[in-house]
Structure formats: structure tokens, C-alpha cells
Image 1 (cartoon, rainbow, N blue to C red):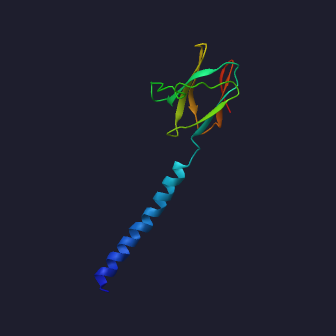
Image 2 (cartoon, rainbow, N blue to C red):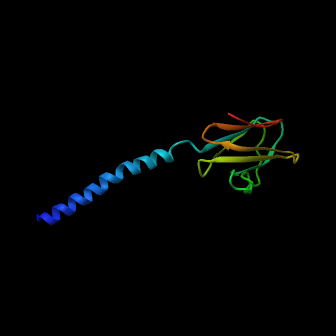
Length: 121
């Protein structure tokens, strides 16, 4: 094998070795927190709407329940698309609402709906 070919192989290998720590750091950052969020209805009423979006977005987004209800003692889990602070809003079947703003989803394990509003776990 020529000296030029050996140098090319060595240079290419160095690039792959240099990129490995960066790729590893990106994987570690991507797994900083679990973005699965469990919402439990511990209130005495049906919930007909669950809305959430990153706090930087002024729009609540779609009703995450669609045409369904979250009945008392039921839970539902959502996978939030990004690690961020989120705003949450629920609507009971009585049209009453409760909101919780700037919630760091990396610091909580879930949200509980009570008759008095929303709480974090």
C-alpha cells in the first residue's frame, strides 16, 4: 500500500475518533429526561379536554383527548416532543378549566387533576 493511501486512511480514522465524543455527548443530552408524562384524573368529574404546549408557544394546541373523556381515576400518558417548560390546561365536562404554567417536565413524574386544579408529582 502506498504512503499516500496509508495517510488517507489515518486521516479518515482520526475524523471518526474525533467525532465519537461529540456523538456520545449528543446522545447523553437527548436522554437528559424522560418526556413521557402521565396525567391522572383524581377529580370527581370527567375531563373533556387536555391541552399543552411548550411555554414559548402562546397557542394551547389541539385537545389531546380528541373526542374522548378522561374519567375519574383514569390516567393517560403522553410523550412530549421536547424537553422544555410546558403550559397545561384542562377542561372538565362542566366547562370549568384549570391551568398550570411553566412546568419543567424534567423535574416531575406526572400531573394530577384534582377538584381544586392541577398538581405535579
